[in-house]
Length: 182
Image (cartoon, rainbow, N blue to C red; front, top):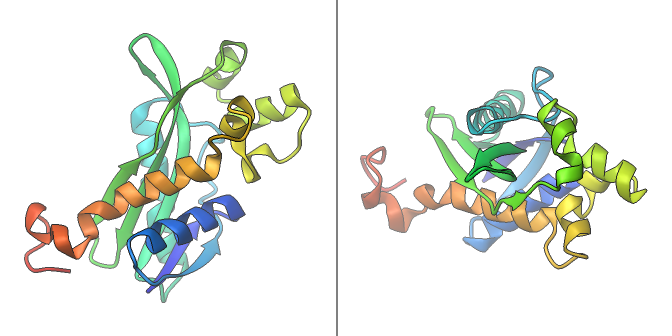
């Protein structure tokens, strides 16, 4: 299966490869540019989901031979009086179906929160604070906060895997959008 991901970030490309492999789905993953209209730091659940969906649809449109387009978007949301960083993945197909998955979320450090809510990308803030370049292309801020025990790749893989769950043949009878097994 040919799959396109709307990101040039090797972390996201690898996450898509690993998520498809997790379910035994052979995938050749290509990378395309993300849509230019996306904000650097989406704030609010709907904005994060919309970013993932827009990326997935853009990937599908940009890669004419791809069967699936994948979008991975991380952003801030409020829950329980706290602000969390969450990763959302969307998988779009040529039939117009979009499925969603979420990765684990973690509480945004207080020292970054004001800037994040103003739209400054969390990865940029982490780079400044920790003095490391290209954090988002490597371990991510979660990797820095956990001293490498959990990385951005981990969060991305889980989000994409969860977006694939409704598409698994064994689950075809459980989701209303499948008239027959995919």
